[in-house]
Amino acid sequence: MAKSRFEYVKQFERENFLLPDTYLIVRVDGKGFHKFSEEYEFSKPNDIRALKVMNKAAQNLMGQFPDIMMAYGDSDEYSFLLRKKCSLFERREMKLVSTFASFISVNYLHEWNLEFPEKPIKLERLPTFDARVVVYPTTQHIRDYFSWRQVDCHINNLYNTTFWTLVIKGGMTGKEAENRLLGTVSSDKNEILFKEFGINYNNESEIFKKGTILVREYDYTREGDDLSKRQQQRVEKQRKKALIEEYHLDIIGDTFWNERPWLLE
Ligand code: ATP
Ligand code: ATP
Ligand code: MG
Ligand code: MG
Ligand code: MG
Ligand code: MG
Ligand code: MG
Image (tube, rainbow, N blue to C red):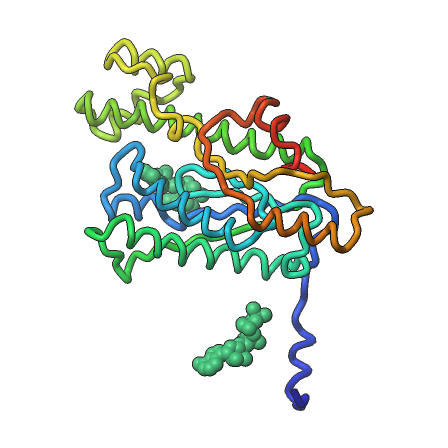
């Protein structure tokens, strides 16, 4: 295309190329989902169908971008791990962040319409997401990152389960339940659930306690730097074709990672 005299304005653009050979994690989070969940009358503490919508949207994203090795999600958030060698959008930060945010938003809407035909989305409250990308240098950082998110899921879920049990079964107002839980630790909440309501927290659904893990599962061959072009293409094809499996299990311990060495290649 011919250059115009206006084109100099392009030079004002700034690009952040993220550090090569490092893990990237993109986390998306729903905007104002506390309100969103009230507007569309989510069941509390956990609306399983809304989680299903989130999980489907995240799966679609993984299907589109084979560089995503795994993802972890709970509530209105999802974290996507991009492999170290990922060169998606030349690792341009703005491209990555804006594409993930828009992709998850439109996919959430799409999946919502399939799951909840009886609850049409209103123009005044569309589901939108923000996104950020963080660069992590080592496998330990990745392990700690996912442990951090899973512990967060557990803490929030224990709180929410106790809070809503006090409200729904205990007949408390939100304020009363909040006060009751002020200053309590995990064991106190477990005890309230068990002694006052006969609920054993351990028996709650795994998806609520552990969140959702999406994994690109494939018959893995080690990807060194010394692969020929042809070998590289083969590995890439494998990754693209790989099944995306859904789990609700512990990712804090070693087992999950030891069984899947390709995730941290
Ligand atoms: P922000 O825009 O700052 O992210 P937010 O209202 O989305 O604000 P979050 O901290 O992201 O705040 O919390 C998300 C909230 O969405 C949860 O606290 C919960 O109330 C609600 N929520 C999300 N998913 C579900 C679900 N599946 N079932 C019930 N409630 C949900
Ligand atoms: P990238 O993802 O890098 O933006 P792109 O294919 O979107 O790639 P753009 O430079 O953004 O490339 O160009 C958008 C292209 O979309 C246009 O060149 C044109 O071919 C097509 N396009 C967009 N809107 C219309 C339209 N209303 N009618 C016909 N073609 C359109
Ligand atoms: Mg938030
Ligand atoms: Mg949110
Ligand atoms: Mg959130
Ligand atoms: Mg374009
Ligand atoms: Mg364009």
